[in-house]
Length: 191
Image (cartoon, rainbow, N blue to C red; front, side, top):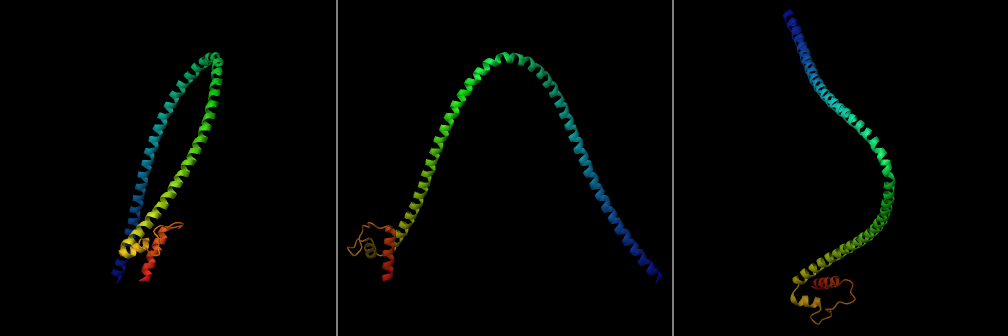
């Protein structure tokens, strides 16, 4: 009994120790992953630092070059003052030409807009005509199909070619196709 109790106690300790071991291994793995991440971050920061140092050196060189350019520009500024008077006259002439070109551009823009409006209007008309044409083609196809399904005698009667009550010429009719289809339905209803 004492041995069983001792064995049970030892088994519980073993289970606890194994759980602690697994937890410790998990912690170690987490710390190793964290260390890898920190090493990667360190590498990236060192790389960024090296790049920034190179950029700083480049900026210093640019600054040195720009300082010499500024000195040269000071000398050129004195020369430019003497040429300024003639440049101002040329500028006035260019401003006048620019004003004229702007006026021509504004006029051209208005004309282009008028043209675009006409084009949009024509496109809308073409679209409407295409839609109407599709409707007429569909109606004619239905009418043709219906006429082909009729016997010759009935087709002649519908089209007004048999000398009967219908006439071939459909004047002052809003939708001639509808009239023909109505005649066909009348024949079917009469049978």
